Amino acid sequence: MKSTIAHLTAVFLLTVSLSYGQTKAEFFSKADTFFKTYIKQGRVAYSTIKQDPGALDELISMAEGISVSKSDSKEYQAFWINGYNLSVIKGIVDNYPIKSPLDKAGFFDAIKYNIGGHSITLNDIENKLLRANFPNEARFHFVLVCAGLGCPPIIDRAYLPSSLEVQLQKQTQLALNNPEFIKLNKNKVGLSQIFEWYKGDFTQGGKSLVDFVNLYRNEKLPEKAKTYFYSYDWTLNESK
Image (tube, rainbow, N blue to C red; front, side, top):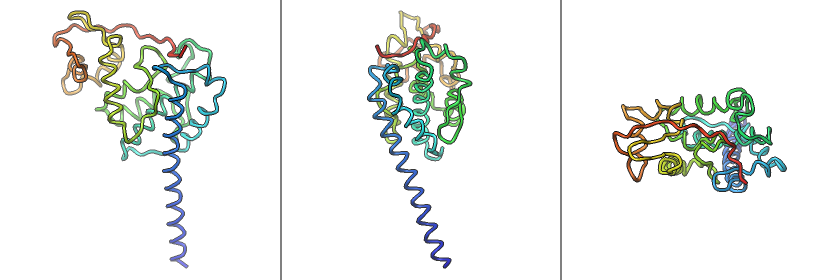
């Protein structure tokens, strides 16, 4: 009798484990399809999603029941990066039409989303689940997209555990080689306010902001370049 119970318990646990694994795989696959469908050249078709929010609502519902562990860092990071970007889109769609995420009070620090077993704000996903747990990963700032044009553009695919390292590297390189994001004029360099707000993330180990940017630049900035922070553009990153 005991062996039968033990066997049934083992089968149950295996079934649950496989189910969770399939749910995660399905989430990443459907997120990939969603981003490919509604994102073009770094902009989001909010109006189209608003008219038919079924795919977005399904993803948010799936994400609610998914559990990820920091012990699998790539899966954890990929899930929460996608979770953040999907929640931003959800927040805009729920309040659409809107010209900027800042037009909705508490957009980042008060509105909560039920994903990953948490009831959580966008700021908490970024700061408590990602930055706090992986303090040396400054590249998060180039893949978490806040719905404003000042952010690096959102990509038309999901972040996947198997390709996350390549994706983080590529998006950081694209941002820091973009003359609209890093504005070089002789020995003066205009930096996004992201570098002002999160300076400590970029200057770990005694690096200057220019040192960090040059890690990813094809054409290096002058070492003694004078930096300034240009105003952030919170205009909605909506496709036209």
